[in-house]
Length: 150
Image (cartoon, rainbow, N blue to C red; front, side, top):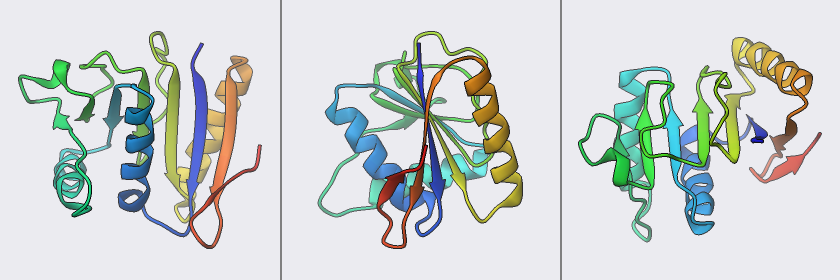
């Protein structure tokens, strides 16, 4: 059964926290699929992940590329799992998927300054709890560190 993690962004944007989350999953030997809400955001995150650090390399592709099934990180706008990932990251309004089979972890990252994102995250929290899924809620402090709140 998938573990659900809710990450409430407050002091740092998605672009700053996503590489760290991806690096940690890769260090555990997990494949990741990242679902975003639009093709524009997919393109922006794709570009960002290639250039976010001079000291690090984060291997990834978009789902449109032929070798997506062989890659450890795939960015997509669809609710599929093109690389048989164990971790699914849902961002920017993407909701927890109905199909959880095959995932060890679902990570929902939402903007704490967006009232619609907060409402959607609360609904997904209730859904996870109603399904008796293991769910945890993490919130950034003023320095950007994650604190477990529930």
